[in-house]
Image 1 (cartoon, helix red, strand yellow):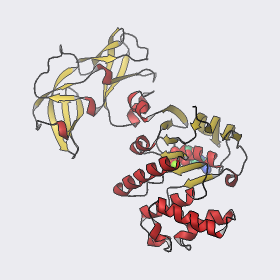
Image 2 (tube, rainbow, N blue to C red):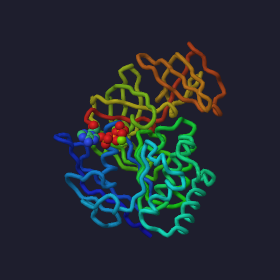
Image 3 (tube, rainbow, N blue to C red):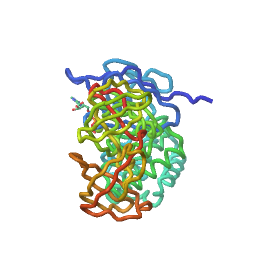
Image 4 (cartoon, rainbow, N blue to C red):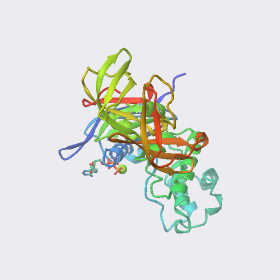
Length: 367
Ligand SMILES: Nc1ncnc2c1ncn2[C@@H]1O[C@H](COP(=O)(O)OP(=O)(O)OP(=O)(O)O)[C@@H](O)[C@H]1O
Ligand SMILES: [Mg+2]
């Protein structure tokens, strides 16, 4: 059974003065999906969310919610729940009153308000704070109340604009788990704005990667990580080692590359078009590189000798900086797999697989 489309953006454009800050934005969000808008500061995430919320009107294009055109429809008629980066609770109201506010506006009966507020406080695991005031709660608790307040009116769409970014790392993670649980339990269609790639990978069914107001890629977290549509997407998500080089030979599904450091490597060609002699940028992620003290026999393909410059133990993994000619290559080794301790000055061999190498041309195409 195909799910219904809850939100549709058709060729949405927004300008501020002469600046186009959102351009040709097309997206369909299925009922119950959690979609993240991910991108660097100023790329147009909040502007797009504000157009969906009805705080801003697009200059061009159509916005549909549950199949109805929403251009010009006021925000309070769009059945939305919203949570922002800063805590937006009313300081002079108790938590109960804060959560009840939207229901009162909708003239819901008193008994029903009590039932629903208590149920939602139970859901965010804070039933005991109903009589307190916002200042008597921690930052994380306040954001959970803000989420409860957004959900209590049973909106058809939940919009979240960096709701976790004012919290410290540990709380952020806790609330991130909580959000995922709530989103799945209620099954509410959600748009989550963030510039934190890990948060986006963790929470979303699909991610929209934005850069300078343009959609770079829309895909599942797996696609975005493993099949980046552009160099921008690859480098924005996760860490990656960058090398410069040229295409020495195209061989069917593979490319033979020569790096500026002089060694050759073999890479999967994927769907890009490359010419012999073409200059390319080559990437390989730190966790995709093998590190050994001896040569692993692989016909010398994708294996190169280097020297350990530095090691950093980070608990779950160790990061080694390995000097290979003019490159300093970062290698990440999982602690469970690490049999050997690598030390500074040690000679090592790095290896990687053709499928783990990403190749981009200056034209921005291909991988
Ligand atoms: N009211 C406004 N008037 C003029 N320019 C604006 C206005 N609001 C936003 N902009 C500009 O539009 C662009 C997109 O802003 P937006 O707030 O959508 O970015 P963002 O992706 O949410 O960034 P951040 O991660 O910093 O929140 C920026 O260049 C910003 O300076
Ligand atoms: Mg923003």
